[in-house]
Amino acid sequence: MGKLTGKKAIVTGASRGIGLAIATKLASEGADVAILSTSVKEELAAKLSAELGVQVKSYACNVADSETVQNVFKQIIADMGTVDILVNNAGITRDGLLMRMKDEDFDAVIATNLRSVFLCTRAVARTMMGKRTGRIINISSINALHGQAGQANYAAAKAGIIGMTRSNAMEFSSRGITVNAIAPGFIGTDMTAAMDDATKEKYAAQIPLGRIGKPEDVANAVAFLASDDACYITGQILGVDGGLNA
Amino acid sequence: MTQEEIFKKVTDVIVAKLEVKAEDVKPESEFGNDLGADSLDRVELVMALEDEFEVEILDSDAEKFQKVADVVAFLEANKK
Image 1 (cartoon, rainbow over the protein chains, first blue to last red):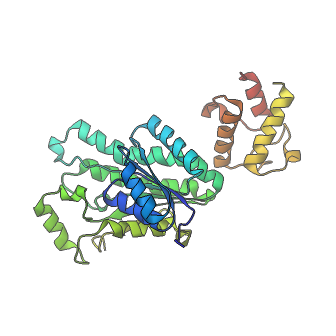
Image 2: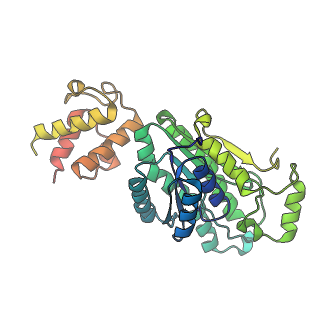
């Protein structure tokens, strides 16, 4: 028996990287999972369902678009019957030094990384409030806590997530819904693969635990925060960073 | 729908959302003092009323709901 048996979870940005690891971990703990990505990933959902013995269903959703989020989440909640866990993981980067950063690069990152958290949280709030229980886990970043040249847009969005996490934790506390954030450090994914080698080496050398993180390291922390074991934890920002923020 | 029917339907929604007894819901009942509704309860109640009566209730209207009678009067005035 997994610690999330029977729970219904929604994970955004779930087709690869940290999001895929999170969806896989939640499913391996017994949760049915709706995996959201920009396009439908039928094969991936079928593979996870077959391997892990739970219902995993893929949905295409532009999480930055209000109407789309409302419609897709309505469909998901109808399909699964309810929702117990929301993991706001979807994120993009459009790095560039501020002086050269285009308006659309700033706006796109804020929309996909921050606005989406507002839209998706609002789309599950009513169901979770009615149930008097729920788990919302937002994926922030160590770069919300430390500065990072070239990431004015990304750092602002990820820091915004921290503020929203704390406010939503207060707002939903009387309904048994916990809201927490995870701030991953340097995790090996497609997103970080896009960083230049010098930056990567500089980062890796600074990690106290001596290695770059794995997506599974983040997924394990999400599974804990999503479980009953974490029922007394809300409004927290948990670093999963090998000690970078120690 | 008559005023009496509206009151009955509103009472059903209040009973379901606020977990109070139907006999405790009277036109003069105040949401805060008598029915124990906090700010989140009020939001949930307004959204449930919107669904039940198929009307849109603006926040500026909802803010004026002190008593059950206020809600009934609003729905009476805005019924389809």
